[in-house]
Image (cartoon, rainbow, N blue to C red; front, side):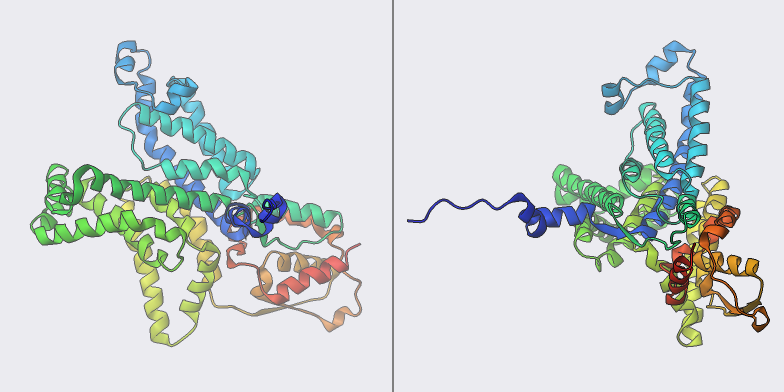
Length: 452
């Protein structure tokens, strides 16, 4: 007769059991470059959402003195009822809007990253919740709000940020290393939560159609009725083909219900993410639903953002000329098509917000130029060390002039004061390219060892 089973220690479970998988999934190491790029994308999404909801919020705030009118339209969402939040007045609305714009800008460049992203999350919740409380709540910003809420709990400013540059500057002042971090725990937490939230949202949208209407929802007439009531640019041509509407209905339900597969299969994202984007585009052009642009932004969580510059660079600079031309034309064509469609409905400032990201990506996709620079003075050697530390060593080859003779080692502590001068260039420093070349990393170590 066997004795009682020996309980497995919790620490061992955390190393080998399901707790270990759970910890690694949510709190394991992740790419800091990917997190930094996602932070910038979320700040752009927050800017769009705040601007897009601003008209309705200001309209009702300016009419706050008309008590009867306000009571008639104010229907607070459930979260506002629990927290006891009320609609802002004219002055409060403008203060909240100004603070949002200010901290969104700080979050985008990565200055006081955790504080700025926390303020953006809190005020965006209040701003978007106010807009929903004055009208019909939509689900276009749900994923965005979950992503913003979890962002401050990760090392959000460790890369692609002013904070990262300041941290390396302080390290250099103490004679330490300017090596850039690559991975860190909790770096994948915002990405994971955003993916899970998006998967739940899409699955619920598809499952609710089947539960409430059954398979009859896919007979084509459902979409036909919606297109007829909410006629848009492409409604008339599509509404004339019932078979096409049936195919679209089946595809829509299938993509929504099966979307959680993307949480477990990376390859499936090559199908589901473009299909989700195509669904929102078609809904906007056929049913006047609006662009749901914030959902486009949050879908970036499924993409290995840190690999994009390398993929684009290889596609545009390697292989036969015909392939490179085709790849470049496809990339530019898709980018132009998306921007052209949405700029008809969005603020022109959206382009200004996205321009630094576009320039940074294009900068990284240029062929690896090897510009040889000769130098001899000790001051030039200091600038060379900093440029290499900022990832520009991949584009520039430095050669010390023979006329300089024997030189002493470069002290990072002695040149650290120059690093803040490059703060305005942070969006263009090329950190999206990943971890830099082996030559650049070697220069960090040599410069660090020679410090002091």
